Length: 146
Image (cartoon, rainbow, N blue to C red; front, side):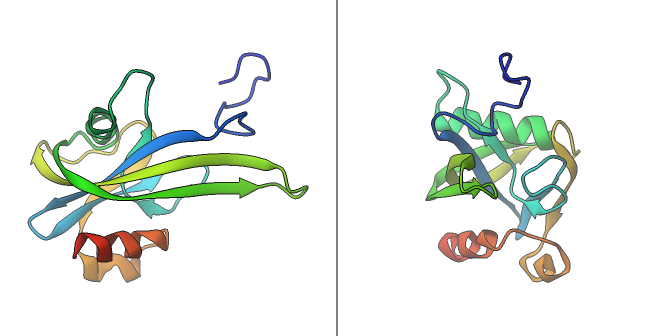
């Protein structure tokens, strides 16, 4: 929360923020979370979040997946980097994140939705049509060779 404005600092930022997301694979399934908060509240996607000051990209991904899903992961490689920019009705940038996508593999833990995830579960690629997912997830799956 931004102390001076009383607003979440993700909205109407002065500079782009950086977040990391992990496409976690376990025995042919991917780990998905249902978003609890905006943007994309109620949509399914891969776990992730903001990188904290002094934290590496890989450490941030491991922390975020553990915080959101109670699962430990091992990072394999970088998948992609993308922008998430939202403008308000007046054309002002209300949200701007640089998103780093990593491919990771399950290490340990039982999936349990926590922190800003409404739900979390293992999903097969053929089940994606049944879920309200972000269209970019399909691009990531192709890049990961899934």
